[in-house]
Length: 308
Image 1 (cartoon, rainbow, N blue to C red):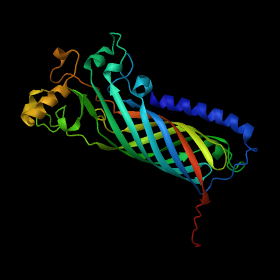
Image 2: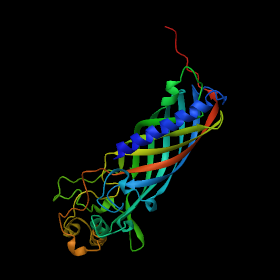
Image 3: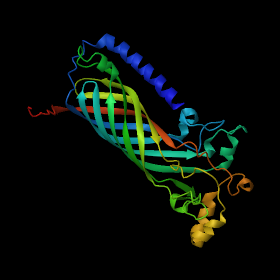
């Protein structure tokens, strides 16, 4: 699903940019970007894509379960070094909010009903750092003829590191969920379930279009998908456990809270040990639609190579 969406969006962006480029390529007075630095400010809307929330029907990975009401903000800063007019490297630091809730599903009584009755929810702040390489295909095609097109589609990828901390609200108070081990992580009864790490690597993939107002300012509009390797951004992944285990491993006070967080189902009589709680086959992710303002710095970075 994600691959099809990204492929289609890329083709549309490339085709539209090519059309614009043919009309504006020799009239804009835009200078060569090679060896210039840019400072970037990014803002956008995040959508969590995981086990909680979503649209009606069977829950799927990708954008099928995109729900506008679950959007949260992303804000970030980055630095971009333009290797050439058609390639660049970028180091970015972002703050992102993510949110998911079964209660926002439009329950029609069909395949989505079990998620709706599960009635789980979470929120998390995410702090991420990415290092990416960006490629501008239209500029690459015309690299020996044109200094810079005003419209430039791009695609970028690289590596990222994120830190998350899922929380749920109970009686008006927000609780960090990982310490409660709601799926038996670290319990001897579940030797295959270890406490999950809240810092994880991911692979970002960006597609978009960059528009140069002049030789100083540019604005990019893009879509950023993330391939993650964790299924616990929302704190759920596998099955329910026996809630009596909380009494074994926790203090009475902590066990009482854990039991309430463990099951918030609208049909509590159906919640039993080893009943499936979530789909463990798909990892969690989140997608960002963003705008990025780029400011070109005055000085080029000249790199001198020693003569051999």
